[in-house]
Structures are given as structure tokens and as C-alpha cells.
Length: 255
Image (cartoon, rainbow, N blue to C red; front, side, top):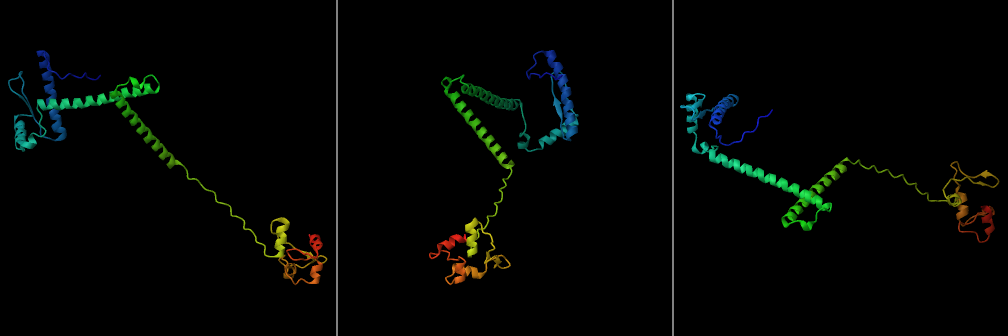
């Protein structure tokens, strides 16, 4: 069970005050002894009271004189740097309490404006019912909330961008090169099927006049595209690639 916090005020009852003095004095002497033992410092305690004729000292009179002489040997500026009396101690406590009070007022005001903002959003309260200080505080609170939302959205977007896996772009299939015909046999293959294929031609009763690679010999190309075609070639139905005006039926029968 925790001990109840004691109110720091003068004890008006004499018997209670005397009992409290004896108990606290003993505790103070014990704390000074613990401080010197644990931290290895020089310290002393001198206590005057109306209940004793002689002051209570710790550790003894010689120890107190040694510590006091050491203190007097210090420069005056260092002696008073951390020195406190009752007035300065009270001022420090008051300033600290005022800061705590201001902080608590700000927290309460923020909670109040948060509740007002919630009521305005739900239609329970109208802005026309608010005073000018309330409107200023409400506007400040709304701006603060918007900044927090934008900051959170930016953090989420950055986190998603870092976690997103890289997109793999598939490689494009190599395009098929278009074959440009260079001979009459190539033209015939393109006209017949749309796709070039090497063709073997049987001419004059089934005898093969193509070479070992399945290509049409040079005399066949010369007979079709040249102007010096022989009579034997013309009897086979060959013609110039732009048509034969003298024998159009031969071209049609050939195909």
C-alpha cells in the first residue's frame, strides 16, 4: 500500500509537529549518510530546533567544520550559484506549477475544440453558435488535423512505393523479315500463296531443269523477263512479266 502524500503546510498541533520533527530528522540524517557512502562526496548536516539545546550535526563536529571550510574557500560566485533559500525555492515551485497549469489548459482546450469539431461535422452544432475565440481555435485545430492527415498519406504512399515489386516488361518477339523477291520464281511464289516458297518446276514432259538447291536456272529467268526469248521458249507459254499482247491465252493457260 502506497503512503499518502503529505500536504506541505505548517503543522499547527504542537504534539504532532514535535513527533513529525523527530521522525523526519532521523530520516534526513540517514539520507545524508547514504549519499556520502554511495556517491563518495563530502556532506554534513546541521539541524537547530526548539526542542533541543544543542544542534544536531552529522557526521560529527570535526566533519562539519571540514566541509564548511571547504565551502568558504570556494569563489563567491560558485558558492551562490546553486544556493537556495526559502524564497527562491518557493519562486521556483510557483514557476514550475504555472507551466504545468498552462500545459493542462492547452490540453483541455484541444479536447474541447475536438468535441466541437465533431459536433459540427455531425450537424449537432452550428458555427453561428461559436464565438470568435472559439472559431480561431477551431480553425487552428482543423489545420493541424489536415497536416497530420497529409503527413500520414505521404508516409503510406512512400511505404507502398518501396514495397511495390518492379514490373517486368516482356521482351518483344523478333519480327519476321520480309523476303523481297529477286527472280521471277520468287514473284510466282508470292502471287500464288502470299508467302515465298522455293518451287521446283517440271518443264517439257516432266524433266527437271532446276539445280541441286531447288532454284530456277538462269535461262528460265532470262526467257521470262528478257526481250531475247527464243521461239522454243515462247511455245512454252513464257511472256514478259507485264503481259503478252500477242498471245494472252498462253498466259492464262500457263496458270
